[in-house]
Image (cartoon, rainbow over the protein chains, first blue to last red):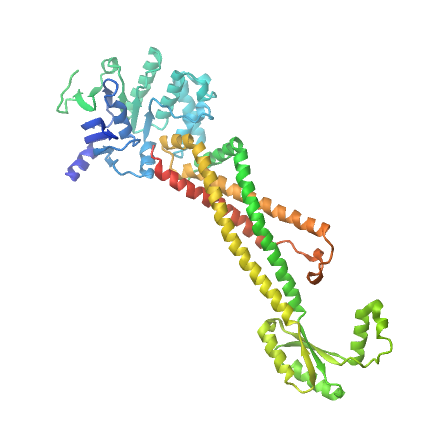
Length: 241
Length: 302
């Protein structure tokens, strides 16, 4: 069974097998989730508040550990991964959560470039790329501002730039367009899709169902921790549109 | 670690030194006080050892000759003693020479000798021992051998003082290392707890670094470098403190302290000891950081 799972895992970028997450004392955030996401696929995870969208993303970036089940990313089993393994995994990921996690004493440009510097990218190249991304997101005039001095939408765009700077293998984004106006949301999605064209697997958690209609992506619906719908024809739940 | 990562470590250290200057000053100051105490013991031990060596260089056995020994017999006895393996050289002090030396030693008070016959003092040999044999039991055994020689009335040597000073240096050395052990454990815990506070203050920074996939060594390196710097600066301050204290001691106290001779002769610790203090300071600072970090890194996953 283990061997079959590992073989399947190698074929997909993300694979979850019967994954549950129970927070003490007995609050089940996810219940028996199984799904596969192919390399370069863009997936929208949707559902009402408390459905388990954020928990699912946290399990995928190892911020939380599942109570049950197995998770593979690019064929790598995440269960029991040590700190070094988690760091290696995150170096290949772009993470964009509702809590942005910036270094407040550093400028916007520094915060974005830092993600490239920590993996050993040359300093000049890191800063050039950080500047280019901030420029594309309309923040060229805010490069030297520190995050606490910026609005929620501006901070969100810095986080987007940081998530994309290393051309990650996987992008996990929790409500990435929540604080943005329509034009900026559009620009953000354009950047994500451009990244997808280069082979990045994108997983976006959002309430916004228009997103799936506009960009024709696979939709995974969660409700009270259960997977209730998956638009991917390859899964047993079937495509819902 | 790549050059860009090394640069990042350097910038994080500088930024922390600027942002938390007083915390760093406090840790370095604490280390300086503890290392100063250790250095003071090292200074005392080195100076007593120098004094002992100087005394050792002057170790001589005085063997007083029987009164009616002829010049030929004196010469034969001198050659015999000179041939002992322990002996560096032998100096014959005639009765007249002994009288002159005694007069010179009395200086202005030499008039008290007026009326006394000039041959009242016995002739003697000053027997100087080779450095390799200047050990208490060896000198004692050699003196006993001399006592059995015909031609000597009394054989004397200042062994008691040398033994006492040797014991004192040994006791001081043990006391220094015992105290150093206690001080180093204390400083280790002080640094560890201070670093813990610094880590808690920078918890968010560590979390952000982890969030973006920074390798463990990149997260830990600035803390270790800071600990090492604090230790090095603390040790440097303690060496400076010792130097000024010694100067003060030389300036403010009488030039002579009896048996110990002149305070001007007090030596500052040698370069090896300075390097030892600097190395101990750096090592304590770095290890305090490493131990604190290890615990925190194990417990924080996010």
